[in-house]
Amino acid sequence: MYEVLALLAAFALLYSSLAGGIERTRVSGPILFLLFGLVVGPAGLGLLDIEVAGEELRTLAELTLALVLFTDASGSDFAVLRRYAQLPVRLLLVGLPLTIGLGYVAGLALFDHLSVFEVALLATMLAPTDAALGQAVVSNEAVPSPVRQGLNVESGLNDGICVPILFLFLALAGAGGEGEGDAGWGLALRLVASEIGIGAGTGLVLTAAAVALLRLCKARGWISETWIQIPVVALALTCFTVAQLLGGSGFIACFVGGLLFGARTGEYREELVLAAEGTGSTLSLLTWVTFGAVVVGPNLGKVSVPIVLYAILSLTVIRMLPVFLCLQGLRAGTEEKLFIGWFGPRGLASIVFAVIVVDARVPHADTLSAVVAFTVLLSIVAHGVSANPWARAFGARHPEVATPE
Image 1 (cartoon, rainbow, N blue to C red):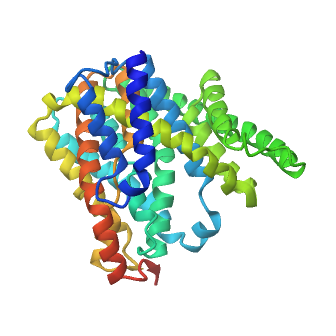
Image 2: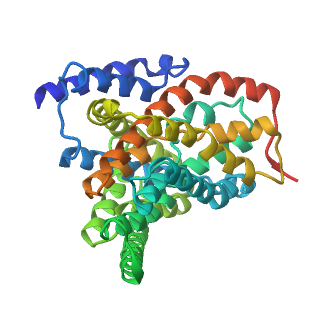
């Protein structure tokens, strides 16, 4: 235990000290995190040894996604969203369903041993994009604001939207592997409705109470600089754990609670949310390292031609074609549409979804986790290397794009 903690702490210290310089290169943080996990994991030196289905990995992954969901939703700028609404609305309401549908069709063609609901699970797990992996694009002011804000809002919200879809297909895949008949669908829909209802209600109630408390404390100057990084983290974890205890979805609670928190905290929202993002970044680092050590390493030997083909399709046609189609009607040329479509990296949400599916003992969970692992690995490398060069070149060629007709 102490050896593992020493390794992780030393690596976190080293990276956090060098992060500013590293972020200006083509090597992204997640690439280094994952490579470090591979080196020290069972596939490398064998220094980091954690069971992939163990309670520790699931807890770490769930808490990381819960905090990321809350902070991403809290950070949604509704004024910016209203100004540039068309792009993220199209990406979320048209592009996302099309991406899941196209991923489903590709999965049926490549994995004939999977049930229809297992294929649907795979398509859903790889549909959400990762804000952290796309940070080099959304934070690069050379990229036009409509594109940056559209991608940022999309990546911040699509994982929350995918949560109930994932649980629906998970329930159907677990119903004898096929979920056949009205009984299977009825049970799955009731389960998802319960997860959504209890989760959303919990997030709204707890966040409303917390915002009222924070407003009172802020007005009286009771929130000190020493403790300002704690409220958002504590609220996100409270929403998650209470919703889980009540039989709802903690992820839905965090997503809905984050949206309410961002809308109600006004001028001091950024101060509170930014203070919590350091904790989220630390948890993400630990999750990426663990993912590289205990998921990517063991699954490298399971890579097959169908897995490689699906991963390539997932990052290209399955993502980029729906984006290209849903952006019709905007003043955006071919390169703009390809740029927006390409920068849909897969990351943390896909990892957590894979851990949930493995823990639920879906019949072919090993295949599903192998596909997710290889796709995320490919995404980390491809998007990490291409982000800064294309962002700079794209911004120079297209100072204003993707605005309504």
